[in-house]
Image 1 (cartoon, rainbow, N blue to C red):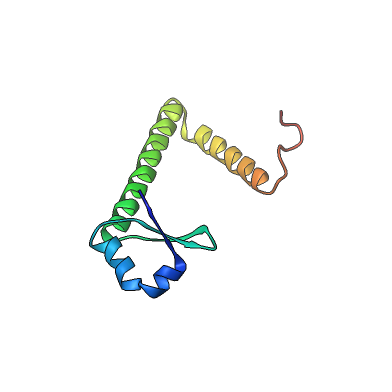
Image 2: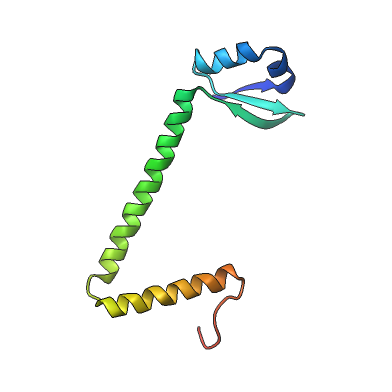
Length: 105
């Protein structure tokens, strides 16, 4: 559970707050004006979070890759290229806030 520390305490006791994060392994939430403002973590804890995040991204990528492979295994290269181009154009229209092109349902 994160430990809340007011920013004034951090200013007065920076070394002690850092020791709590590094030596005790506590996640410290710095509060400013009563609101969560920043987090102090040990380097090891930070690396754990990065690794977990990268693992989730990798899992989503592999799942998407498998889904694409399954969806296109019976298509020829031209059909796949056409489908990809359609989806790219659709995505560009959505990002531009244009919605569907005329004639599309």
